[in-house]
Amino acid sequence: MNVRLLLPFQTSESEFFTEYGELNRYQVSEVIGKGSYGVVAAAIDTQTGERVAIKKINDVFDHVSDATRILREIKLLRLLRHPDIVQIKHIMLPPSRREFRDIYVVFELMESDLHQVIKANDDLTPEHHQFFLYQLLRGMKYIHAASVFHRDLKPKNILANADCKLKICDFGLARVSFNDGAPSAIFWTDYVATRWYRAPELCGSFFSKYTPAIDIWSVGCIFAEMLTGKPLFPGKNVVHQLDLMTDVLGTPSAESLAKYLFLHPRPIFTNSDFP
Image 1 (cartoon, helix red, strand yellow):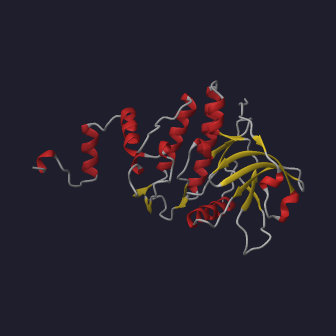
Image 2 (cartoon, rainbow, N blue to C red):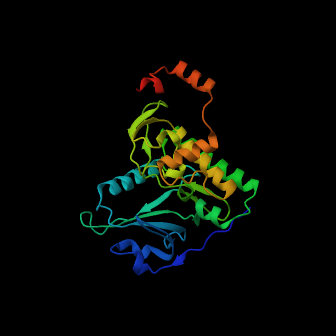
Image 3 (cartoon, helix red, strand yellow):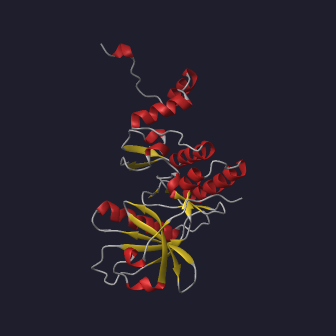
């Protein structure tokens, strides 16, 4: 049960490594990802013979928010150890602890991501869907058991191999909850959780109490995309996003609303309240 993967493109070691003395340990073969953060390249660890992925993060200290995200991801991934979570193998030491701009983090190598798998395969079987969903839910169960909210689940943040193995990555926006399962109130910035996979309670809200359910919503959106080959809620903005959700899910019945208001009484405004 294999899947097709989109091929990467070539690069040279001199284009990838800049100032690091450990560059002789790794032989870079190809770039497998690019983004605003920097570049990810596949390489061979000459000490172990293992194929690895090296994430080069450019100009890491230019923005405090970016540096915070990187530190958070490294700290969490050093603690979270699970077959369905990408593993950090090594962090390359800079030549000077006080003067460096780029960071190189060595991960286990995954050939692609779920976004590319969905894009390159229009013939995924129910067995593929079941295996993908099983791995994703198993990984999220472990993450939530550690009181961590991922907060940015999407197909591009789920790495994949041709043998259908998935691993969750990119914990830069994750948060730890200290409330033993109770809803957490944390300031919610607009870039958290790509809009298409964002739970409805987060749309348009910049301060919200939320639970691990926000990640499960994202898993549902990802699963729907696996089944159909296209995003379930491709909103152009927050309002459009909510409109798409309502079109699919409908609105609560009068009975459901009455039951909710009985359990959670609060002032209700009607048209008669406004002259």
